[in-house]
Length: 468
Image 1 (cartoon, rainbow, N blue to C red):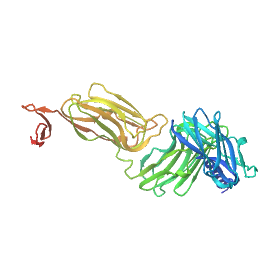
Image 2: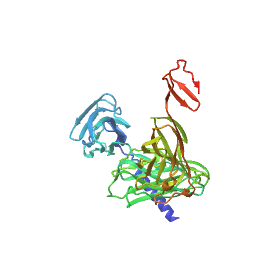
Image 3: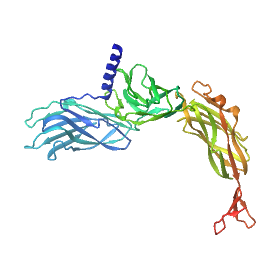
């Protein structure tokens, strides 16, 4: 019991640090929003706001920023101290000094509101701290009495917005199976701590455990706490550590399937907190996932061509998809496709979306075949479910009928351990059939295109079809 209470207390303390929910009764001056994500070239505003002040008549301060990342554009007065004020701003070297004062006879302002609205332009990628110089901050009452206040700084990140996602986004499994999902971050800069709540359907899934990912290093504080159909996780680096930038895995969460159905796996946006080492927040988008549990989810492994049949004209280029169904922990796939080289020619191949941002290799020997290899990038985990592995584009070069089939001796479906995935020994393989037709000329020189028993004379003025 004592250990459990200690963990709960530690988690609460860490979450409070990361989420930064501390509230002070004394006046403070802050930025709103406290953190902002913008694109290169964007022009944007930050509000200098005062909180919980009594009897404010005048205020002045110097605000600092990184001039390598941001250009100062201008400042205007906020509405907290009214419309009839004296307002001054002066740009310095990577700073701007601002002063706002009411006029003689005006009633001082109390409460919270906007003192000034500052406009910047993003000129280079990176993170700029936006800070008040405490020694320059001056708040005064109408009789000149100083008003003490604390400062709360902010930050602006220029570049792509980080995305907090679930990897893989979709999983399929049978009741009793376990699945691991990665809480992953992409395109983040200077991450020091993160906390979040992940929700799931407790009627379909049981939470098993969570472990830390490798993105933030090994010497970290990691806590997880199971709730009602949810799990809360907090990860923080220790003092003095260098923040992490880039993309990677924050935490690895394991669930067990206990009933059939589909469970959404979602982040509660209001609980997501990403922080830099100085405590400023990093805004991020979230992408949720789902887990489907079915008695047949892990059976019926199949590899097939889609569509299963297609009609084309000689000279036409067309795509054919190589799809997989009911795969478990698939990391890499390779196979040879065979076809009649007098009718078809392989032109190109691209990866499908099933294995994510994967790597594809293609070889096209002149023997009526094409060799395809698709692999996830190093460090990825295998994916479950169904989807498109590759899209191969062919050109029809001769008329007739031909199958696009798999050479069964060349098929490999591997997991991260380079072992065949579950169900490989009973793999179902289905080809696709292509009918290639050639336009022909009738004796009067008119073009006839023939499909089955229908021919269309494009010179017929009445546009009707003539029976073959």
